[in-house]
Image (cartoon, rainbow, N blue to C red; front, side, top):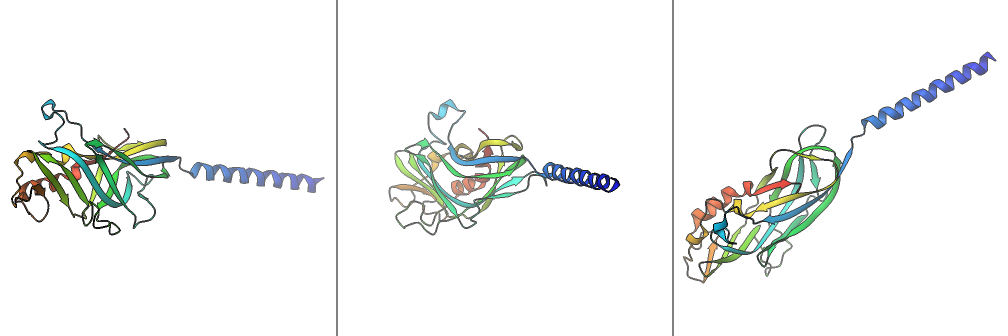
Length: 235
């Protein structure tokens, strides 16, 4: 009888320990957030005087090539997560078509719920593109019209930049979308594209790294604005 009582007590103790262990394991698991990351162009302006123009120009298309995306956590409980998992993958996106802003999905992932400060990304050339592609040997290509002439703005920069959360950290939880925004108004802040010139008289006003048309100051100002033109948001 004593033997049976002892066995029953040991079984009860073992069960209690097992349940306690399971409960501890469950409590250690972080709640997850299921996130879909989308890229989009932002072209809205607060100025009624622009009348659909951005810094004096009509932008008809905007293409970007970038990769090495990572979502940056605000603490040890929400660390940095790379998107996508294939580090060499790059995205070539047309975020303005026929003067209309577009949105494209970059990917989805699960991460620890918590506070996140931004997304790092690297503008980079896509080596897989054909010579006929507008982004061939470029990382940004923007086209439009200004002063009755064609406008082409481009760069081959391969900078690593941070798109910070707009208005503070983002609290990510549950199922939600987050947006990587390219704000063209911020990109051309303190720039009057109407002052750009066609220095080589080839019929296209070009703003680019080799200063073909003599628009270096505009180009340098734009490149100085590049990081602040990027931000992430939940809506």
